[in-house]
Image (tube, rainbow, N blue to C red; front, side, top):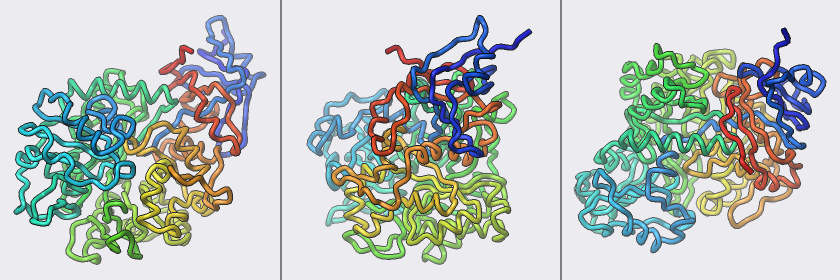
Length: 566
């Protein structure tokens, strides 16, 4: 008896993203039992039976499901569906921020929780919410995940006063008399987050499912959530707790999780990471959370550990080889230690522990000195034995990254060290970053073409909720390299093509996940993770057309998880 396909798409332009044949195209694709069964009209026609669903693409592009390799799924879900919104569309200036928070309803836990203010749009943050909602604790997280604003009651409950000492890798911003103004940066955020009640599952579960549906509507089928675990209070909004990690397992076990998710565990937040905390976390058994539960590791797995090597440039907490910003600072690592040398030594111990545990390290580094230190620590973790060593096997990678020249990229390529970065952050925060870094350094920020030429395995990701999860905007940002106020230069040497950007969000992101053998490309035998666009893929000189291109159909493992009704 002829074995027929479950679904075929015809009259399409199928971008297979086959790494062996990068330009391979087809005009039809067949799906059977959750896998790609055939390509091309001649072959696909033989797969069509009486019960096969046939979709006419009418010339639209079929691409692999988008793999956002750095998307804070839990935090993005709460930002979109669980918190008072303070993004620029809702609160375009500081007065509006105060008005929105003042009018917000108090949550069931007695707190007002908000998210999304962006000083790149609003201007520098000060004590704007200090006197908001007297008697009710208020906390408002910024869009970067590296700052929060709190009111007097939240500070009181957290025990933060003029006598509270600063913390490793964090800043309590103070008035002239030393009293806190309610602005906490990086590691200091944890002081407030730990005082907040945990997000209840009854709130988080529907938020996760709602965001999953939204991501599928964008054609996203895979993601990495970079930081869930016991140190969640020190990252973004603090929602990515161990309980949240376990909730993802519950969704997978109940067959409600249709996104493929990789998780990086978090044993230290945005400041003060140390080898003792990482060792304790690795010994805790958290890495085995999803084992022996019947959960398919292709659906949900714990991949490794997230480490914050430094902060971000706009806060002056990125570690740079040359001074930057109004304070003319070099910044420093936010790793525990009294000196640069001591902090570097501690980072090396941390990477050695992760590597020896057989886990992947994702190292947040936004300054060029921090990036170089991270790369050196990754290489040292396995004795510097080269690209065929465990550094390549574990696929440790740099998150965000900054480079003073191309030599470090060449080293990363030869050692099998990956790179995950965010063009849309460069676009959205580019104007303030240009002021902080200076024109020359900013022009070389995110050297995508240089990374490509060096042979670095890199991917492009949103870092949502820091920016939009809409991958189309990320692709356009990578091609144009514009900022909010300055168009991209036509001859910018670090531009890449639209299809190169697409590869970085599909097959190259699958490499980071140790999953290029089953996803990321549309070739027979691979998972049927794909999306159908309602237009052909645009030429680079018309890449903005991608923003008006809709997703008609999304499949995850052959299952229809989104279908446009228009």
